Length: 345
Image (tube, rainbow, N blue to C red; front, side, top):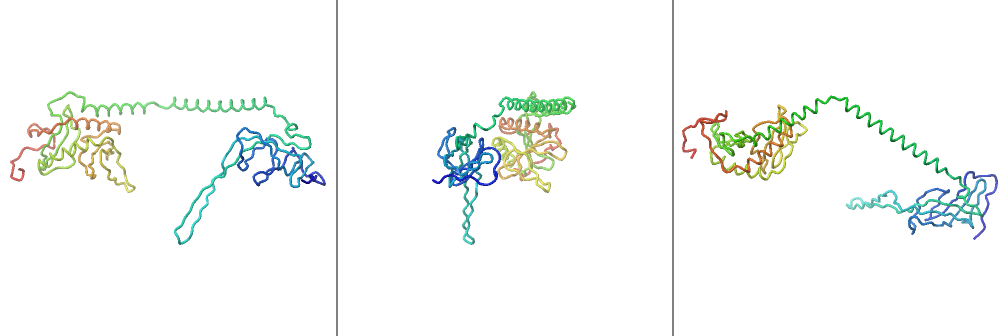
């Protein structure tokens, strides 16, 4: 190995002691405290290593260039850990052959921290200025205190705004919620009256047969969406309704298309907001056709959701059906009995 060649002429390098090292086929300029990523080495985190391929050493105005390395120079480093570089995408294709190959690669690196540069009896770590540890700790404490004070001031401002804001709207909301709860529970918790609980079938003014579901207090909770020409048709529909109510364990909210029209939903319960702003529900079969609708509207979404629980309980408890007398009915849909014909048989 040839002797190092001093750099001739006037001072070309000034500043702290530094070196140029070679590892993994690449060259790096390093000083004491420098952290760098080098090609993967077979080392463990926390281990100290010595890099002997030093190509240049400079100390102030003196610089020594190796041929190819500086004899007697060494750089000590501490292994910080391992990392990976950014992903590189390699994409190959053949035109007109429908061949596409995409591969990604992340290079593995070892992170080193330069601890010392030794050459000619000198050590860069000994000559490096010592940092004032107390000053750094005091500065860190001051920064943490400033951050905490800023966070406390922001929190206090938020609390002041919340205190000054009027509390009427939450009260109204709570009142509406209580009203909805009353509407949903009244049909199921009130004492029984003269009306019969369960499914009823009746003939409307147009001569069509329909069904309705009453709660234990006689209030209507569900009605049929369409009429049937015969009594047998509406009785068969009751089985369809009971089966779909039992299978509908959850509900969905009706979707609206970009043109403002409603999107036809799937099987099960569906809640929606009508033109007056009230919330209602409807029940669809597996083919998307409506089989039942709500008899009344609710002032909020939570109210109609609680109403669905009432419908499920009453539909599950309903055994068979009844046909009320026309004379005892006070609903506008009821019609007086008419003479039966062979068509009704």
